[in-house]
Image 1 (tube, one colour):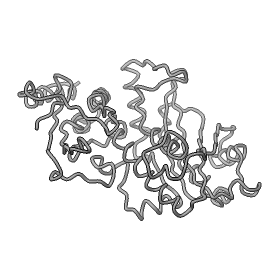
Image 2: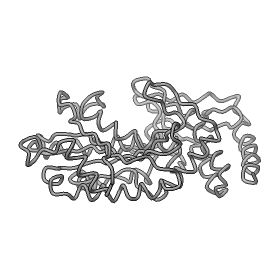
Image 3: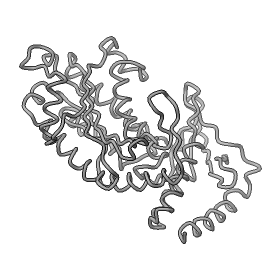
Image 4: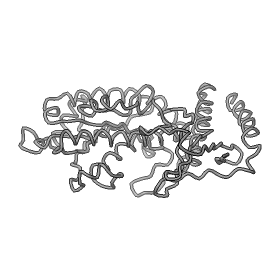
Amino acid sequence: MIIADKMAKSQVSRNNYIAKNNEEYEILHDVTKTGKDRNWKERKMGNLRFSERLAKLDYKESIVERVRTCGDVLRFVKDPAEGLKLYQAFFCKNRLCPMCNWRRSMKYSWQAKQIIDKALEQYPTGRFLFLTLTIRNVSGSVLSEAIKEMNKSFDRLFRRKKVKKNMIGFIRALEVTYSDKNGNYHPHIHVLLMVKSTYFKGSENYISQADWTEMWEQSANLDYTPVVNIKAVKEKVARDDLKNDFSDDGILKAVLETAKYPVKPFEVEYDKNGKKIKRSEEKLTEITGDLMDGLYKKRQLGFGGIFKDIRKELQLDDIENGDLVNTSDEKTETSTGEVIVAYWNYTKGNYFIKQ
């Protein structure tokens, strides 16, 4: 409660500073080349809800304030052809921050595209698989340990001779979902695999779903048969698609699938029928605490094989803890256009720009 009171006073102070001339400013409107709203407002609102939950969980004031001020001020360069391009901002880089996870998702998608593009230059006949590895649901109290063991199990699985034989590279993404029915968590790993074309030739190379399941059970030292899913990525997408914008199918769809898992905001999850799941603020705060503990010092994204080598060769920035302003290698310079500054107004709940 002490932190919450201090936050309220701090918020009033920022309102007085930022809002003093807002009547003269216009609301921030930032859209992509295709006209899609980047929706900074909704992401900031989600960030504030998250910071309030951290305060309720009695996290240190410095941590809560760092999250709360994430994205308070955004500096853009207005390019006549490209529109608004972010060149300066403070992001808290918290694992559960909706604002930061959105930026990470863009950064990951861009990097994954560069890596796969390069890998296909070296292995033009390479094929792609989408693998999902699961364990039974666990309680929040053991979530951290379960994730730790899953990561060790994954390493054991991918050191197996049959897996390594035809593997070119992989991207691994950890997802944790909450079961409202059972009141526990479902950690699982999604993997985008690039394999040699020989993977599909002969029993000595091909790994069936039953084989993957058995190897995962053994690698994870499970006393039950886990749910494992493996499927080939559709081949109808032309290789040239990798040079264009993201496709809705095939290879790039798989890339985007792995990108979204670690960054899905849990308060807006939908059930299998597309219906939004309603959760109380008390429940969301409880889940926030469990995920903060469970994901502490855990890597949610990983690259292996040639993908890891290409990342190093291209000198790509760290996705989870690196720069979240520049989500690609195109760094924005202020000399390229008009500078626009957007301030978050805590009273009006929106961004206002000052040119």
